[in-house]
Image 1: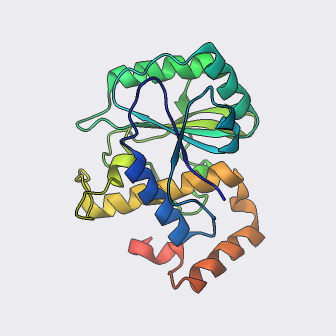
Image 2: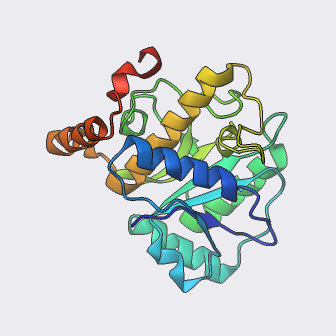
Image 3: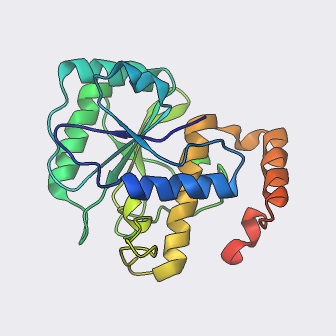
Length: 232
């Protein structure tokens, strides 16, 4: 079973835990991926790091410096197939402090800078066909990433992806999605699902047999095919 692991750096709090659970729930409902409902937290230095193919790092302020041991572990994990999703979770707009820190840490880990991901890349069609990344905000018009060989080991969104999934105590969504409302929230979920499928399968989209399996599972669950939801 796959489990999303929240990368804990410094003394950051697990405030995104509920949002990651909502993310995992949608993956379970819409795809054939056997994913745990509850996310977990892992530090870069933790030997269990290598158990998690998908790491999530969210933040809205200057991050703590990752230890040399953590940098070495992340380098090994990401160089052998792991994928790190970085999410700027600032409420009013992208955080320049978080951005500067993230770029510096990524270069320490992989010795390469973050660069724009082409909108033709398979991550935009690994399950849903998307034209750009959305989150709770829509400030950044592209993902950024670091590519190692044929796959992106790091993918970075500055649109508060997890914020679109955060639930209130009453059960509804806790935060408004701007400027596109609920349709934008759906687009954020679609991106999140694409990211999971990409992290697990990379360019599986070209594997016709796998696609047919996913679509059959959707029909068994009573879900419409991806192209029919919200007019896509």
